[in-house]
Length: 315
Image 1 (cartoon, rainbow, N blue to C red):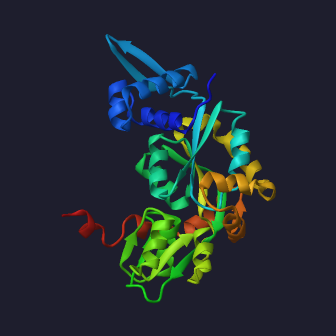
Image 2: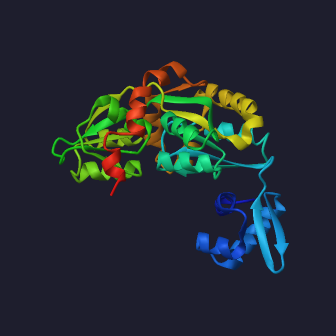
Image 3: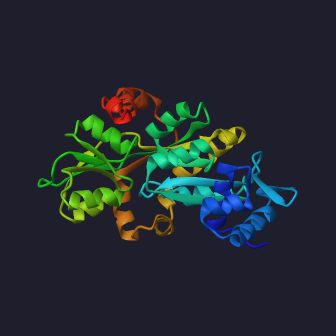
């Protein structure tokens, strides 16, 4: 049987998000031709990932919700998940298809997890906690992850204020550090670096390997000691497998020293040398630190509902 590729998984994500849906509707949603969509849907059908019901001349497509043999894991473009390759290998003993999707925007990743477009995610603790409430319990934290690895890049000649990513560990760092306002949101690490280099802001709150890249460009970098950064989040549709997934994840993290750094670098599209150098900034743990999360809960609340929310939201 022909193996699935990244486009197949992207189409499966759209089907899961928009179902029930027709070929024509999928074509409009993806911008792909009907013939291409039809071909991909047939491939997903052969792999048992979707169901197709014919009504008259129209095919109604749905993703298999129960015991779906396909799982997509979201990760951020960062140095902190070198264990993900082993985790995927172990998950393939549970699920037939396991795919990795790389994000630049942590909040977009958490949103996709809440809607079921992805089933697992290495995402900032604050994003997962917020999504647990926003989704009414469709997002849970089931494993540990990483800590530290974040910092503040400074351009003394910048215009003022700082840039960070919305509802993320980086925004938590900015809040705890009481950085000067205004706070300008960016959707990727490279976008933040661009703002720093163009002098649009004075500070950028970044993670590895962007911090190492900034040091190589002779920018001042001050560490932000976040003991907890990204944790393993899961969609409620995998509830029956939570314990099993958690055990596999713990096994992967415990074997961090043997991680395939070169293979991981290819996955996130970053230079291997940069990843190898920057990975040392992180600490790794198998279980979430509840006490630390409770300690920074006040700062999390200020991020989720900042003092500017009324003026920001009402026009």
